[in-house]
Length: 443
Image (cartoon, rainbow, N blue to C red; front, top):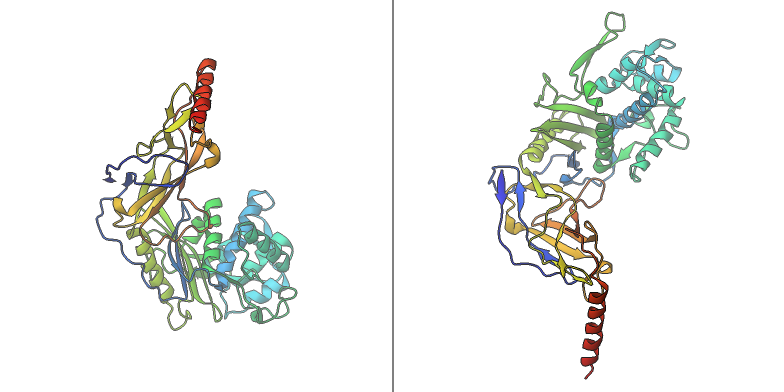
C-alpha cells in the first residue's frame, strides 16, 4: 500500500473557495508512470469501472451506432424483472408463434430450430438467447412477456428512458435489421430502420443488468451447451463471446456479456471481467465487419481490459469522519467555544491513473456562505455533523467523469463537534462589544 503524505500550511476559511492539499492512500505498490489510453481499432470504445461507474477510457462513446444483438440485454433485464415479480418462472411453457417460428428458420441468422406450435420452457429459450443469441427464441420470450414484439419494444423504451437514456432508436427485440423482419416491423418504422445507441448507453444497460440481476453471469459465462439435448432438434450452441474459457480468445475471468453483429452495425461486443476483486465493463462498437475480421472485437476488448485493470489504481481518497487538519477551525459567534473544527462526512473511493503523486492532487473547499453570518462565522448553537460546505477532488490529467453523468468527486464537510450557545450575559457582552465597536469605527 502506497501512502502519500505531505505537510501543508493551514487554510483559513473565509466563505470563499480555497485549494487544499491533503494526503491520500493508493492501494498499490506501483510506481509506473501513467500510461496513455490505447487507440482502439473500432468506431467507439468505452471502459467503465463497474462499482463506481467511473469512466476509464472513452473513444467516441457518445456517438450513436448500431447495436445489433446487444439489444437483447434489454430483453434479459425485463425477463428477470418478470421472474422477480412472480409473473413468470423458468418452467413457464412458451408456445411458438408463426412469427417466432419464421425468424427461427432463417439460418443466415443466429438461431436454434423452433417448431411452430411446439411448447418450450422459458429457461431453454433464455439459454438459447444468452449463449447463442438465438433470434427466434428472443422473439418467443418477448411475446410471452408482453403479448407481442411491438409491446415489448414499448417496454424497452420505458426501461432505458427510466435510466436516463434518451438518445436511442429501438425498433425490435433482436437487434436485427428491420429489413430481415418482413411485415413484422414496429408500427411506423421502415425496412431501413436499425436499433442504435451510444457506447455509453449500452454500457448503462449492461451496468443495470449486472447490478440488479448478477445471476445473468451464470448463463452468459457458459462456453457451450446443447439445446434440447436428446431430441431430434438438438444443436450445439457455442457462445459467440470467444473470450470465455476454452474458446478461441480465452481471457481468464471474462464471464460476459453480449456480442452483436449486423452488416449495418459491424462487429460489437459488451464485455465484463473481474480481476483482483474489481469488475469492469467494456464496450467495443464497429470493430470491423465481423466477417473478414472476426477476431478484431475480441483483440480490441483484450487491449482495453488490460488498460482498465493494469493502468489504474484503486485509491482511498478520503476517509469518512476525518478532521481536516489542514483547514483552520471556523469561528463561532455566541458559542461556549470560539471555534469548531470541520471534518469529512463520508468516504471517497476513486480510481487514479498509475503514477499520480501528491503534488498532482488538489482539494477545493467550497464553503456554503448561507451557513455563515456576514462575518464568516457560524452562529451557535451548532450540532455535530452540521453541513457547511464541500470538498472537491481533482488531479492533473483528463477526468472522463462517470457513466451516469453525475459528480462523484465531492465530499460533504461538516462540523466535527457540537457547540452550545453561550450564556445570556456572554451573548449580551458580545452584542455590546460589537455595537460600541461599530460606533467607534464611525469616528
